[in-house]
Image (tube, rainbow, N blue to C red):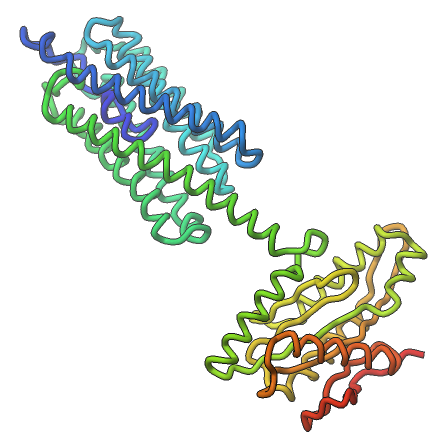
Length: 436
């Protein structure tokens, strides 16, 4: 469709039906307000371009997607600007070139979304579509002489944009819902789908109508379309910016809560998780337990093979702990070679058994270190469960640490914890074999 139908989505406009209709004597006087609305929309899109330019400059990540959206806004603004020059301007510029700019803008809008979400980019398909429509627009010209309305560049472009937006709405729905929720997916994919439907309707109109209304004329429908464009372009640009901010916020949150080396939760995140379980215990008496884990003789690895080898061992240990834990469990690195396992909903008698399974997993693992070969590790584990007399979660951690030290003193490579009778005398329940 003509410029109006396209500016709603950066690239969703398609100048159609300009060739056949002749302006009435009153058209020049009435044209001004619609032309001004086009220019207002161009200004709005230029502001969005400035916004994306600032985002590209400030934000290091997502620059590929931002560059696509920036260019899409610029090309849409340029295409609408050319449409606002009708009917006085050169029709090869105001009709043919404007439509091609808007088509490219739609392709870049869709490609930016694909880059952002990690979808496959349909470059071959989009390039073929662009070349076919560009060839048809040049071949038929801005005002096809045959009288066949569908040959007008506006209707051809409308069909092309409709196809691009339909594929975009369908292709992005699943990933948008998975990453940002169904509401966000509904807004983004719904906007694309809505304007795809408008474009399909516009292209169908080119097949059925013999005297369409030029989009540069002062018609109520045209003015409504321009107002819709102002609102819709704002929605799309700000939603995409919102999604980018959400992703950056998620990454920052991940950095704050996770250990850089192992990817496990860090000390702060584990303390927060422990505090959360403590609240559940106070409110609903939901049991939980913690397991303090320390690698045996880890300093010897660093001293013998260096810290890079020690880092590899820590990463491998973290992967083994995550594999051996339940989905609801939290595994964190508290510092150095010390780890912590939080077991929500775990009964006191089950916690030592869970810890023993982890100990066996670590002891049975054979780690292949680059340039070193096979390395085997063991760990000492201390178990503690929440009890009625506890005044704070710190008391549980202290018991787990005390049990860990008891396991170390007893010979390492074992699980230790309070006796099943609940005595806190420091006696250890040894489940694993002692190392020589």
